[in-house]
Each structure stands twice: as C-alpha cells, then as structure tokens.
Image (tube, rainbow, N blue to C red; front, side, top):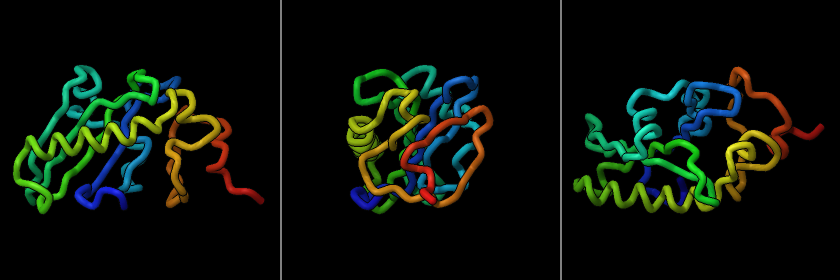
Length: 146
C-alpha cells in the first residue's frame, strides 16, 4: 500500500487447501479476511478474465487473476484504484495489472501461503486474528515468540 498511494484497497482471494470455497485470505481491510469471496470475485477465478466496476465515489474496483511466482494460478486479487489517480478505466486496469505483477512475483505456491514463511518479502505485523475453518498448522514467522 505504501508503494502505491493510488491504491485504496487490496485483497487476495484463493481457495485454501482442503476447502471448496474461495476466501479473502489477505486484505488491507482486516475485517474482510476470512470472508467468502463474492460472485464477481469467483467469476474472475473461474474465467481468468478481469472484472471492473466504478464505485459510487468514483474509484475503480478491479479484480484480476493472480498466480504464484512460478506462474501457477492461485486465485484473484482485488485492487481498488483511487478516483484521484484516473478517471479512465483502461488506465486503472493497466495499473491494477502492474500492481498484481509486482505482488505475484513474490508469492509462494499455494501450500506455502498456509505453511511456514510469509506471503511477501516485507515487514508484516498481525493486526487481528480471523479464524479460517479447516486451516491449521505452523504459520512460521506469523506466530508470536514467547
């Protein structure tokens, strides 16, 4: 978020191992973590085609497919581009893909998102805990040390 001030919100949606529903597993709005993905989000995952909608305040809410650093499909990422950045939907979509490309170059394969290690190579702090049914195991550096 700090690297891209044009971004208002970002959220990562995947279907965790052992589950059948896609969930928001990481989001700049912590209250959304653990929520089941909306139909528009699962549509992006199913088709591999981006989605775009204009919010009531004029921001662009973009959904784009995302892969891990090796190119294996993971799910989708929601990126909301601020209305102050552009009023052109094509410019917003291009920026969403640029941000997605930066992020996916740092993502681990699916099992690595849920066991040992972190999702991105950046300082991470736990804001709140949200239970994810069916997800268990060692989350490596995300655990607090005694």
